[in-house]
Image (tube, rainbow over all chains, first blue to last red; front, side):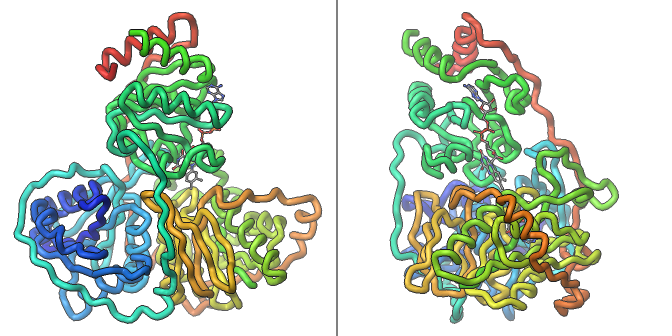
Length: 322
Length: 258
Ligand SMILES: Cc1cc2nc3c(=O)[nH]c(=O)nc-3n(C[C@H](O)[C@H](O)[C@H](O)COP(=O)(O)OP(=O)(O)OC[C@H]3O[C@@H](n4cnc5c(N)ncnc54)[C@H](O)[C@@H]3O)c2cc1C
Ligand SMILES: Nc1ncnc2c1ncn2[C@@H]1O[C@H](COP(=O)(O)O)[C@@H](O)[C@H]1O
């Protein structure tokens, strides 16, 4: 038995729905008869066909945020549509900066719980059970909502395949946002993009990440060079992001990106649970670490116990001279 | 400038963690420690109060078993006082339930700003603080990597997918900070000594007028199963020697990435 209706908060980047948005819509289409999306931003109605191709039959257009942060407006738009109408059975948010905020605001507004860090959902007829990983992905916990109200899930990237299982013709409706008062007080005054070249970290077939074991910031160049040689993207542990060696957008893990490349190479990374949550799903894992007890070796397919600052230059040489 | 910092007290994350098989809740036996994630918030608050030229930093923490050792760590860093909400009813609270308790406790104080971490080390729902903001009717800025007070307003650099946004908010407001926003100080010996005599008020669920509204019994979600994830096959691990890099190149060739 499938559910009646699921809402998905759609997010966009570079003039298209984000991959995670398509993952959530695809999943919603397998669980519910009707999938509807909410979106904010200037001219999001133009994406109606892109969303319809994945099964969205209605797009609630919140319109331009005019400098506001999305959380309060999205929550107000959803709560507004719910009031006086039959609520959807479930609402899916991506575990993104804005998705988490919107889910949290909506949960408090409606006084219904939210289940976060979801990596899989299973339908049992009456509702959805959500799986999330704890202890660095070693243990999977399944949770369920009790009681009434829409079931709010915050879902991690790459938990579902972005497949168009059915299409729908998608109508656009404008979503009303009530006056938010002080909750809408925070305004974006400027946006800054950090430059990066090469394939995207969360889409690259190969990821080479560096950690504190590199020793010094300039050694990160080795990671970048190796990544480039393998047509991959460079990544990082939080330790070196916090230390300012590389921008935050390089971070792999619980608070950073989830990556599932064909090959993940961890250089000088210990394998803390919060790092592993973001890369354990990689198909093949290589680790280089001088401590043979480092937890990263427990998940790797091929590991070398040794000094990264010696091994990586030799590896780069060996690949170049092939 | 008065600041409330939400600080979670958690089981030592370096110790082996387990779930209680009868309740499926995280085992919280033994001494709790101040969540590392929250040391950044405490430090941020101390620095902001300092540059404002005065005010108090109040720590707010919810823990079911009367635990204050984590709060004492924050007091030793320099916070003025603590509020502990402790009640057996609170065991098994979900994020919303926790947020209701924290919001009600924060309301009993005078504050210009509430600071929390983007996510805790053990629960890591990352939703509690923004739920608190909604319950208090406050604006919120999550994922702050830089926080200042400029002309009586909160000025934040907020991480985004592409880089970061500059965000300005009137006060009172709530901000969640990431690790790396500031370098937390270590409590000095003097700090540790003076922390012992700083006031920590203890409130119950009834004190906050939330009886029957919060805690495990009133959380709308339940853990229905716990299982071990599929373990990865043990791999080949070799010591670095003359041949190690050659073997790795062979492995990469086999994967057809070179
Ligand atoms: C709420 C929360 C969220 C978090 N989110 C994330 C996240 O998203 N991503 C993340 O990565 N972390 C995250 N962390 C941090 C995480 O717990 C670890 O602190 C971090 O991953 C450690 O990074 P590291 O492995 O580079 O450093 P370390 O743990 O210090 O490890 C360095 C490793 O390098 C090895 N080494 C040293 N010298 C050499 C050498 N010459 N050659 C080879 N190896 C060497 C050492 O043996 C060691 O294993 C989070 C933590 C918390 C509390
Ligand atoms: N029980 C608690 N007591 C005090 N603060 C909390 C509590 N739970 C969560 N918080 C705050 O909310 C942040 C995010 O927690 P979480 O939602 O568990 O990821 C924490 O780092 C704290 O700042």
